[in-house]
Structures are given as structure tokens and as C-alpha cells.
Image (tube, rainbow, N blue to C red; front, side, top):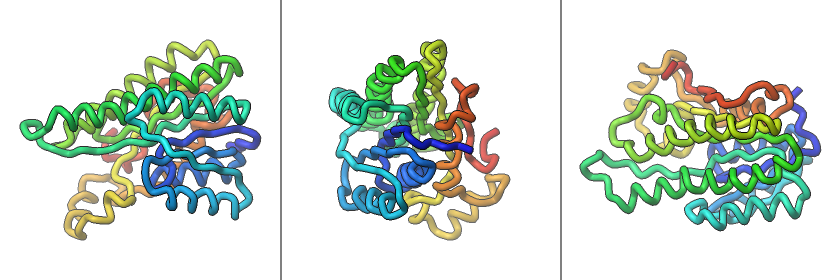
Length: 248
């Protein structure tokens, strides 16, 4: 089940956190994984080395998702060089937190260019290859705050809501080509972002999560793997919530 042997998957932001777990899980299911990073080349190569040591195939490429032209070219080049691109996981993103009255225009534009502009550019290039193959899987990483909002995260929440809308629209455009497009909205996941939280902060957080814990990157990766598989062929235009019941 969820066999991805012979398929090529591109995971943006795959050097750490959720992206790393996604890259490792897809490779474990047999996919040739191309992961991108914007900084931390050593971390990216560690992921590649770990996948290779486990018998998988992976490679890392530097990509700044704020550069739409570079994003589109990178995806197109991967598809051309490897002869196919079956799965695109648009995971890379940034968060610039600020209360509305303190939100700088330049910060708003930066987060939009990465989280929305880069995602759309990568997808545009991937779709061209998938159309020729008459099949493909596209998964966008959104967030629980894209659905329910959060104080101090106007810009971030706006971008994460945007990718849900984009996924639904693109899903309608390319369903006839057997290309599925979905989003995943993780809740609070145990990554670098939560490691800096105090025990008191974590305790307060767990009180608003019905399952009373943060999630793991592997749990998000499992959802991505399902949506990438043949078993999810009849699932498109959806936003799968992996949030412990925080938002229903």
C-alpha cells in the first residue's frame, strides 16, 4: 500500500522539520526524492545521505522560493533531467509574525512571495509535465491558522488560507487530466518552532487541542504519503487537517 516505486517527488523546504520527514517518508516508499533548501546545505545533504544509507534515492538543490522565475525553472529542469515528475509537495514557507498595526509592507510582500508566489510558480511548472503524463499529485502545506486565524499572524494566516484556495482552484482546472491537487493543514507540530516553547506554554497549548498533545512531523508526512499515492486517486480539492482536533 502507498507504493511510490519508480516515481519522482519534489519536496520544497525538505532539509528540516516537516519537509525532512516528508522527504524521508516518500523515499522510504520508493520515490526518487528531490528536496530543495534555501539555506543550510549541510542539513540538506545529511537528509540525502540518510535516505541513501537506508537504500533510497535522493538529491538536494538550493532554491529561493521568493524567486518565482527560479522556482519555475528548477522544477522544469528536474522534470526534464529525470524524465518525469509525479509528485510535487510545496512545503517551503516562512513566517513573519506581527500584530496588524506593526506589520511592515515589505514583510507582507516577502511572505506572500515565498508562501504563495513560490508555491504557484513551482506548481505551474510541475503541472506542465503532469499534463503530458496525464497523471500527477500536488500537495500544498497550509496550516491550522489558515483556517482559524491567530493573533499576530495576519500575514502568515493569509498566505496559508491562500494556498487552500489555490489548491481547490487548480484541482478543478486539471481534474480532467487525472491530476489531483490537495492541501494539508497541520496544527501545532513538534518541530524547531515548538522546541523554544516553555513547559507552561506547551501546557496551555495542549488544553485547546482535544488530543492534548502536539503532533509529529512523521504524522504529517504520513498524510502527504497517502495523498501522493495511487490509493488517493479519487481525492482532490480537499484540505486534510492534521491538527489533533484543534480545528474541526
